[in-house]
Image (cartoon, rainbow, N blue to C red):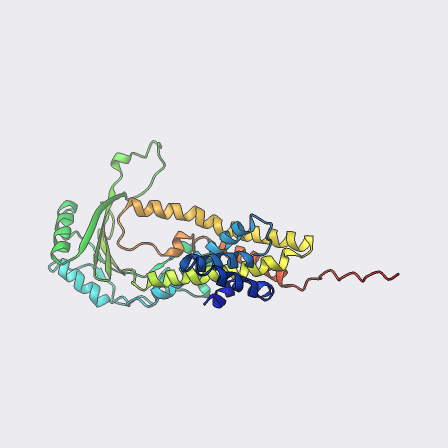
Length: 355
């Protein structure tokens, strides 16, 4: 088994010192068996892959790169898992509406299924969506929903409608949360025409049953429609193991890739090292800035109102809202790797002087 663990070390290192490592392990094995020895071998092997034995910061930069790649890898894996979720069914929504309000038909019920699990302005992702994703409207890429709207409140007024709604949800086996009140519109604080006490409020109730999630909105006075129900799918259970697997695979691959690039530039020329470091730093800034900006905002959003379904992982990473910095960062890192992969001159051995 210990021979397999040597794969954590780079190939040249294994050829030069592999036999010595195995002899040392066999000598120490009786006293240090088990996970501790395995972890020691793997940890030293992964550090050896980075080269630069005198550097104290190379492991930090490798960790920064590895963590970013792992998060994006987990995000992609969860997206793949999401695509296998059960399609939305308009007849299922119509059944929910009839169950909640048997005597008050909705003004409009969706009569077609969404074209994809995730949509941009109601359409599946395509090349036509590139402008939206790269230039400010990436937040419109979201899980598809189907909706039913009411042109009059089924309960007569909002208070009665809200009370009756929560009772019907409970009777039908839905787990509900809310209500959440929010302003129907925003105005500039402290402006003379802005009186917070007079701004009408919207009411939102969240409910979940099985893999169905409902967002029910009661809008402020003077709006049409006055109420709607939006149905979406809950997060599939496969998203969680897929995310973990994607994180681990991407992390291991990123560490090996960074180690290869680090060893390639370790003995390279000053210009190559400086250029590679500049491109790497630019790429990491463009990748991490959206993450550090978006993650706290999404966390505040989640703690500020109830959620039966957490926002997809890529939204925590600022994607695809800030996909342009991600793309530019990827191009910068690709340029750094390309520069690293170029053939490098090694100093030739000096011939011995002859007398």
